[in-house]
Image 1 (spheres, rainbow, N blue to C red):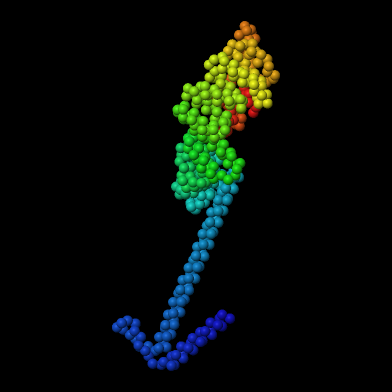
Image 2 (cartoon, helix red, strand yellow):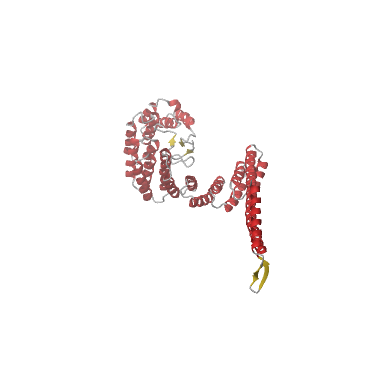
Length: 430
């Protein structure tokens, strides 16, 4: 149909040209320049103009068709290139997962070289080096990638984590700060920077980042956990203040905002005592002991008890604690220790005899019994008790990660636990 229509149009055009030529047999003057002209039949000039127009139209059509053909070929070529690179990436990752690390790395490296603007291959390649402990190669690779992809958050995050794995806290923080500048509201970036500050013990900076993180959280349970973490960070920031008065002021503000949580009250008392305000510290600790019985409070009060009446008052407070609040056997141990400090051997022995589960009591029991026997002149019994309780130092342990420490602390830097340290002779019910 199209061919017949084209033939018909061609015949019509030829007939029209022939008819016009028959009507105009004489020649006309055709100027090709201002001073030059030619004589030619009108029909010949019309045919020439028609041919020129057809050639121009065909040229434009051919250029457009050639452009479309070239773009189609180029897009197909690029698509095949992308598919081939993606195949290398998938195959390389699969080989790494199957333990054929060298072959997998070769494919991943090849994919990265062929498409440096893509970050997937280099991230997988760096992860393979980290998995085999080649941290230096992983860091070098990610640093090179970060120069090419200086705004890619995945590359920057991986580089920061590589620095952290190598213990390079300053470099880790620098990269995370770059990442935060690019993505100021990204929770991953904020958490990474916060943890970097924590590892560097920059508690105030960590607390500031934690505040920004809290503003981005929507889940109530997650927000509650992170708010608890913020309290711990502010607490740690207070502990590193040099002036005792400044520490006391910081802990007073935190204790008010937290309703008097135990770590705040213990550290507030420490700061008050260091600032020469021992009476105020005693009031804070005793009030805390009545509300939340803990061994650390007993030790703090015993440490500032300068007179026998102070220790007697502390022993009275211990006796008034309810049995459902405390482990009574450990209460008897601490009370006996207080009596021995004042030379009340009989009262101390009475407290030790009141212990119900002596078989599973802490080693302090044998040490106190040895001291009672010694003061009563029973040297053989004292030596025997000393031997059974010797070499057992009193310690605190984190109830989350089981880390041991000779002193109480409100925040476990190993696991990030808040108020998790308990004494070997803990009176509080865990």
